Image 1 (cartoon, rainbow, N blue to C red):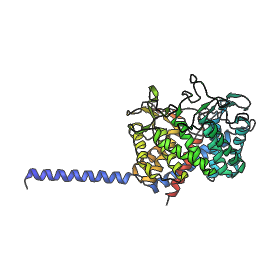
Image 2: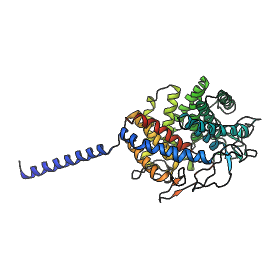
Image 3: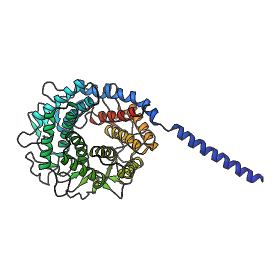
Image 4: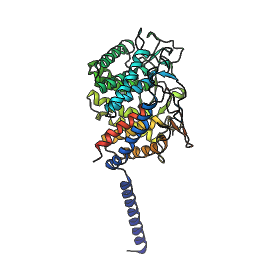
Length: 438
């Protein structure tokens, strides 16, 4: 063999060895299910017990007026009595119910859930027209925003369905069924499918010239609203077993897995006309990574509840997750950014608390289904980011936002920030991790 050929052979050998060592190092560094379980079970138990549940149980129950006080600043201090909005009031009923059903301080949390449930029924329920007001004052006596939005109604249905599953109270289930029938009569869209979203107090139509409580025209349907109708219907069907609830659940699965997905993009968009024509003008042409990732695991859960196979949707799940990974994921520090324009890196680069919570649940669901280790890596890196940057051990609860400059900002509790996203995330992740700990 010539000297030149010998050198080439040695170079090839060195290159092959380097590649082999690189692959080996990557494989050795990749997290496995068992090690992640050992690492994160104690961390997440502590976060759930000592950081989230304790914050809400010790601070939020309004023993004077009923319901929950949800108005705490960045330092965890009360900012005043505030108002009471159906979304966060219902989310907190849901949180205490879910904690109880998961086996945490059952008696305390059932009582805390009932405390909020009674306020919903006594003060936020429209006894004349049915449905829940959007917002009332701290006492519940003044109806500040009396119109009906399906986003808020969805969380009310979600909360009472979960409260029934946790408590077994037939009166709660009976009311949930009555409420479901009201939504069926008043807001189900028999022509185009899905639900009409925004109504006056008496369930009449709102003029198109006016806005809705969700920052969009009153005539629009939102992927976001229907996503939360999906989770509400999933839990309601588990509670009621009504055939019509299953029918609506299957329809919502179709909407969230097909109608709101832009096929040439591989991601979802949020705004639609009543006939589901997508609205993509201006800022509507934007992808919310958190909603797309949340959609994945909520669809899986809905399929399980409806007893239909998840397998036909695997390609969709991968596509949605891959889009968010490509454009919205921080490969260096972990975590997902807020949102971005089509096929471009995220331009809104704050990391919002709820996006991170949905990402780690979805990553575990995806790995459980596909066994692809990349989802464990996303879970590990994003969970590490959460533990280091989002959880506030000094003041309790989580910071609302982590900026690109590394600032931790935002209230611990307000009308749009309760313990639902992060509390649910810890419960869901712990259920999966505990199956993997041995």
